Length: 279
Image (cartoon, rainbow, N blue to C red; front, side, top):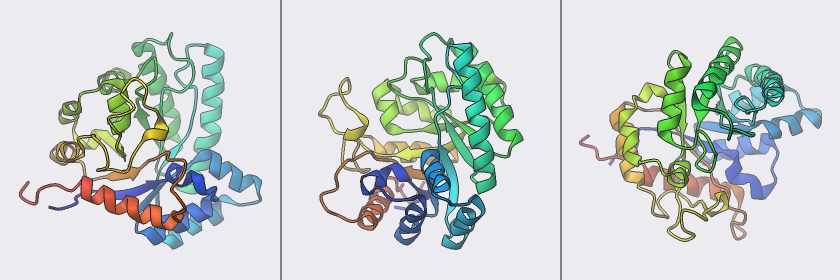
């Protein structure tokens, strides 16, 4: 078996430890990750405490960690025009921050009130978001959420990306959201690797059932019923060789240290997403 991808740590995994963004970077680097997904709210907290973006960028460079994506929440697809306008203003401020930090991308999930937004309208709004983001040097990754009232399936994300007309639009994939939204794992096989921006990795149990499962129930890769090996093979066959980012929301790790959890997660991801050497 071989592991053909790169590994990133989504800092949600370390939320129980209430660490600052600099500590997140230090843990990710020491655990052996090549990349990190920072949450904009944590960057804001760092700045509010007197931190400076150039210093944080140097910290990333010195640690040998790439800021591969940021987790942000903008109402870019909200059904209410006023909320959309506010969402784009919010996005511009945070995208400028991310560009200065040297962060490569930002997630664009269906945050806000999207029940009344048709997918065609969502495609138009994503095109505007992509123009704004790319103009600042940050790539938007279109993300679908399994529990969202719109943009909750892989097929819907593909449709929005296609209809947007955004050249080389990229998706953010997540096994948990595929499961909760009812997306067929085999759908990944219809994607080309260069249309995948990043892949969140996690697992989920058989109980609670699909209808009741929540983010807090996510498991380490390989510890649940997710078809991780099949997902790895489909990603590999698509040509994807980018980042897998460990994203968990477990509230209590039973006294284990942040570094221990980060290292454990890295090992679990490698084991679950390795592919046969003959492929």
